[in-house]
Amino acid sequence: MSEKSFIISYQGEAEEQGIEERGAEERGAKMRLDKILAAELEDYSRSKIQKLIKAGEVLVDGRPAQKTGEKISPGTEIRVHIPPPQPTHLTPEEIPLDVIFENEDILVINKPAGMVVHPAPGHSSGTLVQAALAHSPEIEGVGGVKRPGLVHRLDQDTSGLILMAKNDHAQHFLQAQFQERTVEKEYHALVDGHPPTPKGRIEVAIGRDHTHRQRMAPLLAKHGKEAISEYHTIEGFTNHTLLKIFILTGRTHQIRVHLAFLECPVVGDTVYGRKKPTLPLKRQFLHAARLSIIIPGETEQRAFEAPLPADLVQILDELRVR
Image 1 (tube, rainbow, N blue to C red):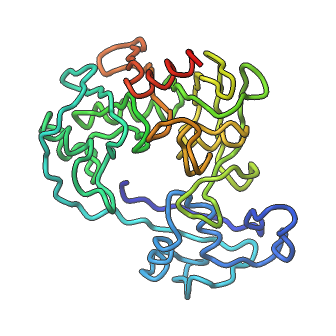
Image 2 (cartoon, rainbow, N blue to C red; image 1 turned 180 degrees about the horizontal axis):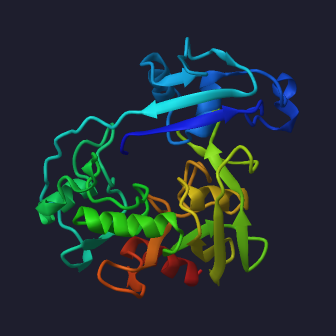
């Protein structure tokens, strides 16, 4: 993430807590600064937000914020400066990659489940980025951030297609299409139960869960960010349904949150679904199967596909003979 600054104009809306719990924090009431920022900065934990405030990176009506719990009145202007991350040395690692397509501009990889996309606390090695650096050393420094070449991400336990840029021009060219929502992204998911209709559209805003900051949650539109998913039934089973999912937005954990909202969570998703998986699967049944995008030097979308991995195929085969 590069350096950026932005302005929040607090108008006195309460942080979403559920209709029954809003009480004194109705529109017009003062609210804690850290709660306002937590609602706006959904990609940041409370601890990161507190560090920004303590470092003097948050201005309240032009003055440095006094403390994280400072009460903010309606009409207050809050300026937030997010400094760029400190560069870290990433060590290339010779890890085999399933490369679907490669040219001088891009790398399309079929990521296996279990592989983390980039280094993070608890995952300092064995990541996709480190494997890609060994495969294509020219990726180092692309984008000028700690996640060289990345255009989008997949969860650790989601398999399938991920796109990487091999130079700055390609990264900007590809990122623009994700931002403009012109990229076609198709996922396959096996869910517990059956959705209310064979196909449908889910338009439910998503934001940070206010009680579990590492999770996302469905929220009222004014408190979350727009999230749109469409699903189509591929095959039905007695207690499960295989779905094709198209996401029109790219929110964190979007498919998993939306399907759980329908009360049809992804099989094996112990965060948003059943705590004990209903089928013998060691990860969530979610696969990025198809991606269509215009690549640098071309004018029409090109489609890339990745077949279901063996562990997911086995689960479907077992369901079909029951």
